[in-house]
Amino acid sequence: MNHIHGKTIILGVTGGIAAYKAAALTSKLTQKGAKVHVIMTASAKEFITELTLQSLSKHRVYSDTFQERDPAEISHIDLADAADLVLIAPATANSIAKMALGIGDDMLSTTMLAVTAPVMVAPAMNVHMYQHPAVQANMKTLAGRGIHFIEPGEGLLACGYVGKGRMEEPESIVDVVNSFFADREMAASGPLQGKRVIVTAGGTVERIDPVRYISNDSSGKMGFALARAARAMGADVTLIAARTDAAPPQDPQIELLRVESAAEMFDAVRSRWEDCHVLISAAAVADYRPKQSAENKIKKSGDTLTLELVKTTDILGTLGKIKDRQFVIGFAAETGNAEMYAKDKLVRKNLDLIVANDVREEGAGFGTDTNIVSIYDAQGLVLDLPLSSKDEVARRILLLAAERVAGAAV
Ligand code: CTP
Image 1 (cartoon, rainbow, N blue to C red):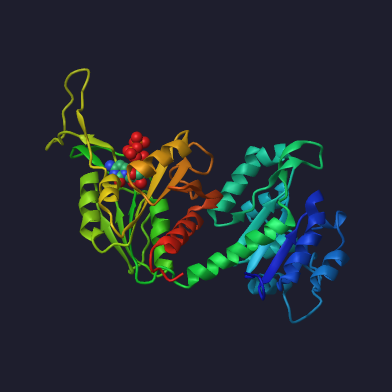
Image 2: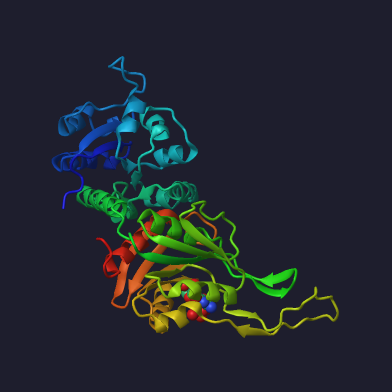
């Protein structure tokens, strides 16, 4: 289905050889019924003419911040306000850096500072430039702010190298844009209306004594993003949070239960389990706790101290095995072999979906605002999400749940 029709799209074209592909992109988006406003950088004009993109979009092309043709208009603000989506294709390393830093020194970068609409970026550059730590760090910053990246493909680059850096083909970009609008429309239609969703978040705290404990690096951000996304889709949400770095969502519509240990988290989840439709276990639950928690602070004595640890209850595993109508989603944060371990957990804990990530990957670890995940069900891979904000990852997980939960309004 065409979800692009009637949308206003700003197409930012920056100066790389892939700028020639902007012509096909403009044409395809326009044919789908989008109103395409092209903004070119000065370097882009070295590769493709304004006239080409003006003829294909049937709209004036912008490139100079100070060339205001209509006295009643301030172009970079009016354009920014009108956009349903901003697409930067191709995006050079320089334009990505300027966005990350908030530099506004030409029409496109100034408009980007005024934009509140969603932004998609299709990078195109030499493979070594793409892998440069500065470029990767800038992309991570932008992804953390909610910018969507359309990953470049691998292949022969204009510079003669073979590798990752080739801008995705216009047809595929149009498909990504179309699914993006489709997802937005579906999420806004409240597909989880009337459904009760439990989300666990954060790292559990297992006490050794009143001032010491065993915990982990979980920040709670992924769980909080899931709670917000579920609420935005109309669900009744209970968020069960252990120790977190980030602040939980301040939404009176989200029931917040604070817990400390795995045992307390288990009790809290059980208290809401019977009438729950979806359980998402994003918490990093300790697998072991001290056998005894000392009543008073442990005083130092010998050269060594041995703590005896005992297993905690596997919350997800226990409930996964007794579930009937509940749709259960687990997480597998791994350091290598993520797919294998995730699939094993899916079967062992009887889950409907598992979200796997390799916490060693740049942008996928604890505490970041971004994640890189693969989602599996019993049949195999369901969805691969490249570097994305945790809000975006959360939305995609909830959309999958909405599609699969019986009776959800989709
Ligand atoms: N989990 C849980 N209760 C526990 C431990 C884990 O509910 N006591 C949940 C987590 O919230 C996560 C999933 O189970 O959704 C996977 O957690 P993990 O600790 O990686 O699973 P384990 O089966 O303990 O595997 P591992 O051998 O890697 O520790």
